[in-house]
Structures are given as structure tokens and as C-alpha cells.
Image 1 (tube, rainbow over the protein chains, first blue to last red):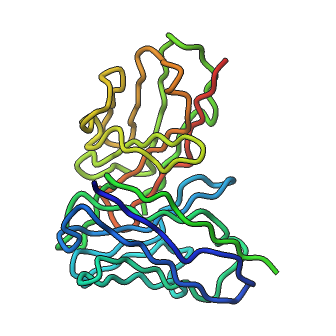
Image 2: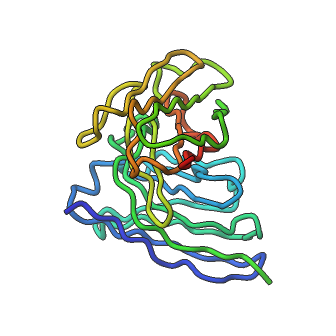
Length: 124
Length: 109
């Protein structure tokens, strides 16, 4: 069964850091690009970041650029999102999602498999 | 960056009726690379449509996508009770970013 399981969410103060993880199983992880997408009650779904199959190409939403870093460990079949300088507006439910292709040229596509998500709350 | 605007924000219909959801892009989406997702409370999004009109495996044929350029539409021909949810369009023709629309909530009238 294809599965993505996120972890690492929690309550953090503004300015703090958090690292999310996403463990993949049931498919050849290194063959696919991966995404982070977040859901907030007021704004709906927001694409956050993506990384291609080998980690050479990455993309970020303007709202997180310079603060968040996406990475992956293909040997461990795990995707990461390092979140620094967190703001209250980063409070959201964060999903990890699988792209349908490898994004070899850095052209990310759409997502066909999603994890159940993890909650990040930024509050003092 | 392509910005997607979905309308209406909320659509109130009854089971058996036809639903038409709109997604308008701020500029032409290359290759009409638009996807549609359905999201129910407490669940992750579910892929319905990609490439503007291609239904993904397992999606009932009452769901259809159409459009090109800047205007895209998701149509649900006869609403079933399980279709009431939030629907998002996403463009991936000019990525990154792979922007989403703000969503349309389809509620029972």
C-alpha cells in the first residue's frame, strides 16, 4: 500500500524552529518528486515547497522562501521540511504529497498521494 | 506567478443537481496543466482531474473537467451525498510555484 506518514508537528513559539518528516512506503521513493502543502482555515490549501527526485531542484512559495528548507533522504525514504523563524501565519495543517513524476528538470506536476498531515501551531 | 481564482466561494445545491465550479487563472496555464482535488473535513485532498479533463483512476464519470487557457471548469453532473466537500484547482504548467485556488465549498441546500 502506498503510504505517506508525517510527523514532527507541534506547538512552537514565534521565531522558533521545527522540522517535519514524512516517511514513505509502498512505492519507489527515489523515482518521484515530493511536495509539502499546508491547509489553513482561512486560506485553504497553500503549496509550500517541492523537491525533485534527487534533491537537485527545489521550489518554495514566496511566503516561506528563506525560512523553510526542503530536503530528502532517499536511502531512508523520508522527506523533510526544516521550518525556521516561524510566524503565527505559519500555523496550519501540513501535508506531504507525492508528485506523479521525478521533476528531473525542476518542473513539478500534480500530487496523486497525500499523507494524513501534521499540525503546526505557532503561538506564544 | 499564476494566481488562480475560484468561484463561487460557496455553492449550495441539492443531491441530484448539477454543479459547475469555476477556476480562472491570471494568465494562460501552459499546456492546460490544471488539476482538481476534493477535500472532506479531516481528510487529505483527493486527486480528481489532471491535465484539465483527464479523470484519475477510480473517479466516477459524473466528475468532468473542461477548459483551456485561463478558464477551467469542474462539473459534477448529478450530485451524490458524498460529493459535498471543498474543491480546489491547482496549476502546474508554470511551476514552481504549483499554486492552488482558494477553494469552492459545495454544501447541501
